[in-house]
Length: 88
Image 1 (cartoon, rainbow, N blue to C red):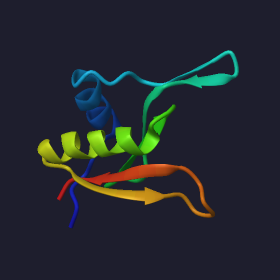
Image 2 (tube, rainbow, N blue to C red):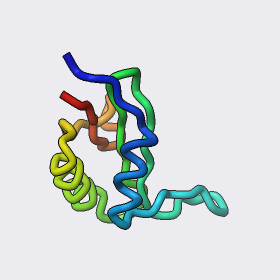
Image 3 (cartoon, rainbow, N blue to C red):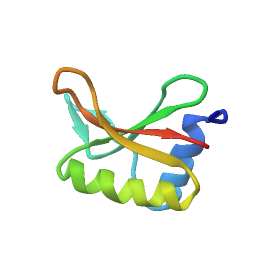
């Protein structure tokens, strides 16, 4: 069973690796990461901005190196790509 996970822990790891948080400025998203809690045992990581698939691949490698289990997915009906992150 997966262990408890906190989105802010994942956010901290990624910002320490040099990723910037995305911000909503003047009606647009500034490129960067967003981490959202998706229950007690899962978090979602999104990339806002160009190069989404490449950036998500980089983030996947970094989180796996930090002992997280990462599965790339896409939201229903052709929605946003995201990473589902758990801790085994």
